[in-house]
Image (cartoon, rainbow, N blue to C red):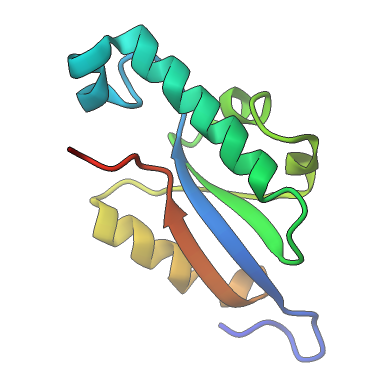
Length: 123
């Protein structure tokens, strides 16, 4: 469904992010460097990412999992995160979850939607 006629559309860059919880985020990295170290690195990465995108001219959003992840994430992010859109990821594989975000873009009033993952590169 398209946004209502005359409604302002927006450009949004979403970052897909998992709740920074021990045993939930960065589990493969945790096997190599330890769970605590992997989680500390992930938290630092989220802080850096949020800071780097705090002054952009488009809206930043967070595509979070699980649905109750936002309270765990927002405390790590730049204060401008209060203005960010937050969308919970549905159940399903990554392809299904990506498609769900884009299917809902028009209903959220988004003209252009970009999704970036917050994954680190695998070795």
